[in-house]
Length: 378
Image (cartoon, rainbow, N blue to C red):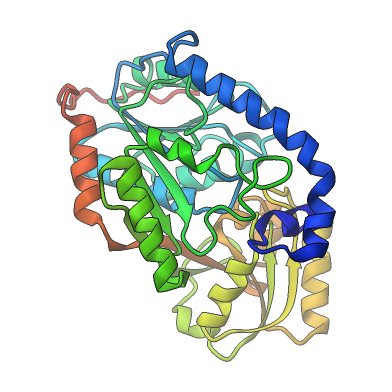
């Protein structure tokens, strides 16, 4: 985590933290004004929101990075597919080398590596083989392609709360219950893209990492969610569900990590959560290498981490599934036995019925799924 991010996520920064963040105060004011103006233009219809021709469920958040949107998007897309819908996920594709519109998966299989699709689209395509994944900056264009070319009849808009150019039928806002707003400020003084009053636009609040939140904070967030949306929130924890090797093949039980000396490799917005996960699994984290969020690892970087892990007496280098799709594929496969990948899913603790009801309402006016098969799109 950089020095700036440390200021962002420290809820009580103290005198030194406040002093360090003071120069950003002047920059926060115009950002806040611009965000408010943009929101008002959408609220009044001056800036139009395009209808997609299929129901849209947006998964987003208020802060930048690390809230747990990807597990939430996986869970929502799987639930929609379970209803018989032909689902397409629309993603910005952060971390990709390309910025044009592209199909990461047509629902029949992944078509692009993470370097071209972005890490989150690549992961979503791998985890949801029956779901199409499209990526690019213009989500309305992606929606049109998904509906007209791929026959999608339900769309999941990844990281879409601020992307108001595409109309949606349900706005799900994910908050990290353990630290939802950081220092409370907007960019660049804090991590938030909008103030918490923007939650009034949401249809559902999803509290990730609810197992890590103090009881009094969790109750306060429940009240905030109900006041903003009229619904109780969904609450989840990040549950490790599988252990893979460097080639992303099953590699035995998660119990294999217990008592093992390991090196942790990550490129996440908030890597501390990954370290806590490893420790909860009983691993001894002897070495931690944290890179910036969405970092594309080079072969040299992976080789260096493997060397350092060997020197520290580590059995494995352990990383997240989201990071694993960004590793050099050939080198990761060659070092498959020295790498371990922890898969994490959102385990719902409360609010499963609330989520199902919200999805039912979003789909209520949608046509029934059509049985026509889709042709692969390149």
